[in-house]
Length: 292
Image (tube, rainbow, N blue to C red):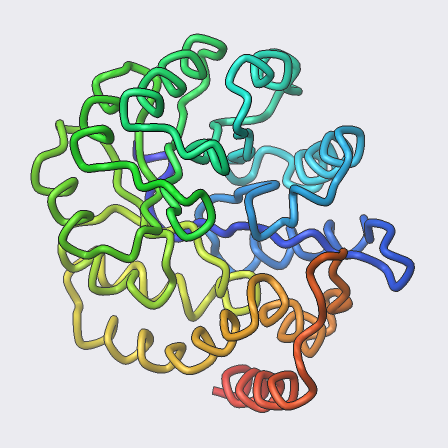
């Protein structure tokens, strides 16, 4: 579990103005994360706009990140879906260098808890790689209960959960009742500091795409119990974090990354660029943060 502890980043997928993938921008982003102290990288999560990429594009994005990373940081790859058996092919064809899998709870189908358990048991049987469960009811329309998460934690290669339910009591129950060695990662940037203070192990962050050093400072301080420093960094990032999610993810963080000169703010439809007002507010806050 220590491999996936601390400040992880859910990488965006940079696009050119014609909606093709900007592989140079992706390489620059990977190098930026490494230079700024990120602990691990997540490729093709929700923030990477994975539903809009073809199978071949996803493969090339992963290969590009692996090459740019050059084994410097652990790499987690997002593989999930609402057709359980269809995941076997994806999981059996991964290139060397992937250190773990982030797998979202099945969306749209709205399975009952027994269905979620059976789904992940089958997914776990398809690979020897460590698996991080991903609970994000706002996108899947079904919540993984505490009991379901704890039952799945008994499977050897299911090593952690990324919790984005926003339900603090639920997440703290998982932290309180989990078996030794099972990790709990925050999936909500603005809840990360309080969750780390409550015993969580790290985060898979959107905000850290743009501000990895500041976010890592907050995570590290929280993990070692320096809550004064952690609170300072938490509240320094609080406003821009809310802005990033105001009109959907990853529109906001891409504006900040464009302001930093790393990528363009382009997204693929059906996602759409943020309003001019929000863009201006994010750019002002980004300028303030990089001058600190």
